[in-house]
Image (cartoon, rainbow, N blue to C red):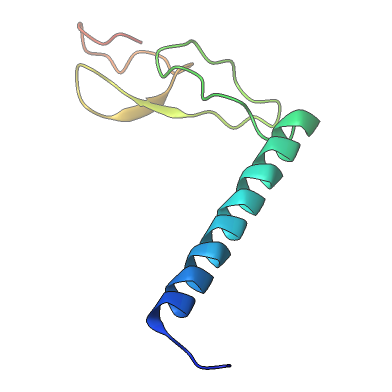
Amino acid sequence: MFGFSLMKVVFTIVVVLVVWNGFKYFTRMQEQRSGRVPRSKPSPKAPEAPAKDGVEDMVECKACGAYTTRSAKSCGRQDCPF
């Protein structure tokens, strides 16, 4: 009556995984609706303004390969895009 079989164990594992993933999906939808998680990531080529706290992302200089902020001044090279 209470014997364990392979089918019972597999079925229990599948049910647990389905419930777990369903809960994660439901939680993600609730976070998106409340505005805590962005729906999509911004494109990497979109111009970015400095954050309100003064933190900026670093970008690679095409000329010398150094990482600088978007608001950085020229490094002195003629082909520097900054």
